[in-house]
Amino acid sequence: MSTNAWLVFAFGLAALVFGGIGAGLLMSQRDFRRIARKVPGQVVRLRPSRTENGVVYYPTIRFTTVNGQRVEAETGFGTNPPMARLGAEVGVLYDPERPSRFRVDSLVGGGTLVGAIFAGVGAVMLGVCVAVAVTGGF
Image (cartoon, rainbow, N blue to C red; front, side, top):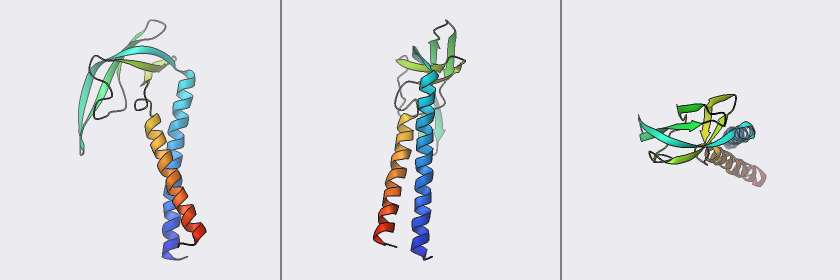
């Protein structure tokens, strides 16, 4: 196989990995939404974390479950700018079996946006590979 053919193969493999990660994130979000309960919550803290690209903010959310249990926990997903300002009310999706397992009900907080980006990039990359292969561009 030529060097160009190997490059197309490697690019196609990377496309499948990106698409697989995106699909996995989207399916995980869908499955979580099926079992989750939705309640209002409030951002009570924003923890800054330094990265090589700047600062990322991890919000701590306080909410009360439908059974009356109070929960205060930090999200596992940080953003810059913060996904909500300090004191803001946000929608919370939580696992009724384990309320500390929760997500902010938003495109960013739930992982939907990240999953869609990965799936979209994978689809575009795969489309380029197929077009190159079909046209004999390698």
